[in-house]
Image 1 (cartoon, rainbow, N blue to C red):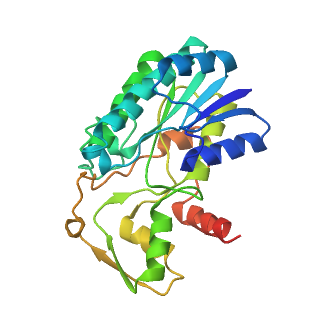
Image 2 (image 1 turned 90 degrees about the vertical axis):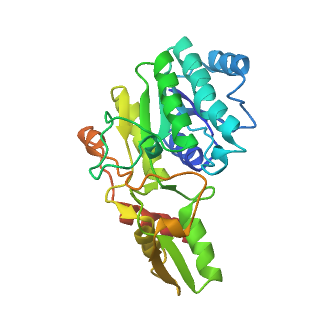
Length: 280
């Protein structure tokens, strides 16, 4: 089986590529420098040349703050237009497609976990562009698998866990937001679910994937730093004004993923595995 991975140098893309290779797949990983997903002619040519069975579209613009102003155009081009180009190319060679989306397609105003078919209402430019990307993907590849995820952390790249660990080395006390609820996601577990979809040809549609159990950023930080000599204090999000609005409660239901038979570890378990891996 031949698999194209876009965004292969990113946090998720590196894990996906490594796991696929370990399983013996023929992998064609493309970084941003190696494949400009905004160049339709180049994308079409490369996809036709490889004729993959699957395309795992991990490439994305993820700077939520910059997406509100200086990065707004690029956010829309990459997350909407680039995703449409990838989906169109996939359809042209009958390749199956997995597209990674976000919990930020929701406004966070409901207290129950969001189901995949719940109404969307993004409150920032990043969420709006990713939602537009979902629609563009489905226009060309109606049986695509869209995976919305949240609070991703992993060994590669920048993420909240690394930020907390670095700050703990410099400061005695850290203030962390305690009024935004979500589910942390270990990139390696998300990558494993993507491969699970491939190997079992799980039906197309929208899936919500993160690790099990919910948390606030403060609760997540406290768990990250419980072995560190630092005080972690809970604060209201008003103490950290940001350009991009964040949903207050973006917990997504994992029921649909669980119904596929995939075993979802808790985020606490995932964090322990991550910390063991970075200490090796």
